[in-house]
Image 1 (tube, rainbow, N blue to C red):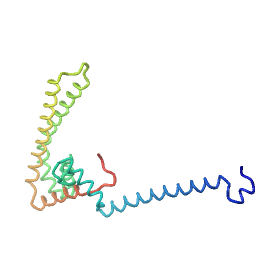
Image 2: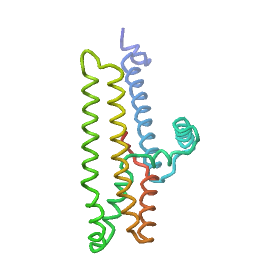
Image 3: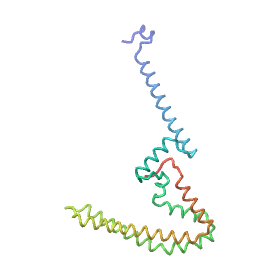
Image 4: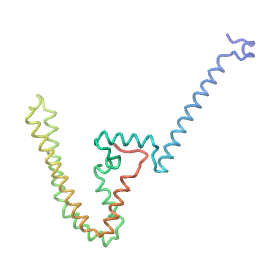
Length: 194
């Protein structure tokens, strides 16, 4: 019971809980501020802490078995070359872009047709996966094989386009393209898409 005598001696229950809540709140706020400050530091400095570099190296080694590093993982990212090509095209003068556009247009229809075959093969696989009763193993294996072949053909068409495109570049433009790719590989984003 809280009597005037207990309150004078500091034995009132309310003030202790208030003090405890204040300390817990202050601790949580400091933890959040520290985490935000660390993220900002890592983002601006561009250098990962040693523990994070070790973690990335271990992850790359598990995935590849060779310890090739995080850069090898990022080089395999889908769309990296296409995004780099777009960025290079934006940096070139309009006259040079006009010279390079026909190369890209020449491959556009082939790539679109190859991607349409990939979409069709994926739809077939999904149809077989949803089928009741389930499809037999041979039909599923054939559908997966057709999907793999369609995706490899589409990827091949895109690589042929990149081959033709990079051959049309001057040595300075090729070097710029390589720098753009490596810059994208080394870029560290605060929030990454998975």
